[in-house]
Image 1 (cartoon, one colour):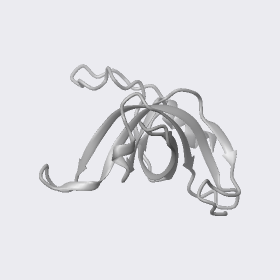
Image 2: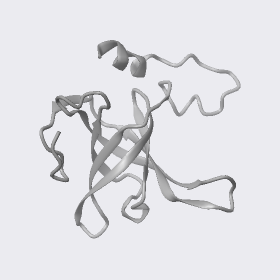
Image 3: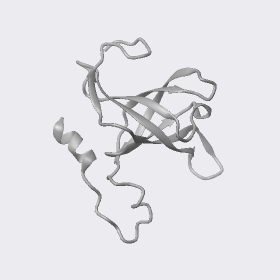
Image 4: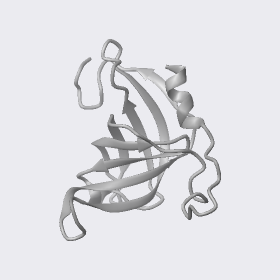
Length: 141
């Protein structure tokens, strides 16, 4: 498990021609894990959103949601990323993050928007590991 997580914290090598390298300090790794997001929307309502993790790095992540209207830039979120292959203990990573980008996802071309929206976040603190018997939606192991 430790080796699995170490790859998220390996520093990126600077690229002279990579214009995005100044924004990202860590490499991104594609992942398809379930994410449960706890958020407070603009109306002050606390919500739980079940989303799909797209990729993760040592400093942030991108996940897909159907509740795009509930997210906004600089919004603080509580994330629980459920780890595949840990069904016996239903392991998850907990962390706090801030929304840095909300992007519309397109299926095959720029004229056909998907039902999902991409939410890019930057982590505020180090991951915490947790064993979960039931998730926020009341489902067991």
